[in-house]
Length: 244
Image (cartoon, rainbow, N blue to C red; front, top):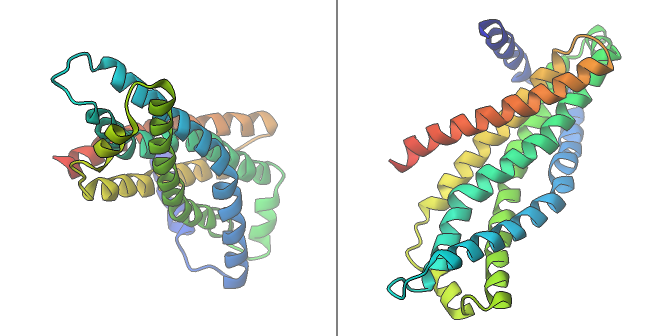
């Protein structure tokens, strides 16, 4: 484990260097914005809508006393989605989708000796391949999580009015009640940290692949598992630091 940490930090020291050619770096960055962000929008939207709907229905179902107003459905849905479900659950989904893609892409380049060819040409392959993915993830993921929050709240409202469990006025009133702007800041901080974990850990496992296609597949699996574990650990750490 200590050896893996050492290799990771050495790799990151090579990643965070001045790009050799800014024009190539900007072109690669635009490509990563699309492949890591825009192509993930569909699955983020679908999961967010149904996640908000399920959370609202479960909250309404568990309010079995007239002493608790139905506006608490909107309030609970908002707090759950903003503080935990969108930044954490969506990041775990992206760890599976984006993380496996990064690891397999870089791992394939390593196994086919394309990375060795870049080194021979005098290019810093770690910087050229991994840095655009890290920056693109850290910039585009907050937009994905913001969209996820809005769609999650919309899914909760849609579930309430279609099932008749909660009136639209009560749900919207709950959404607007006791709002703390720091909740959004907290969600965005977690999102940026999780984006770095996903892109850097996946890039590390792909870059250090040794072997053929089977090893690339194994590296992709390890990238997803390790990224998910680190997301859960840092979720606890950031919650302890920011909310207590």
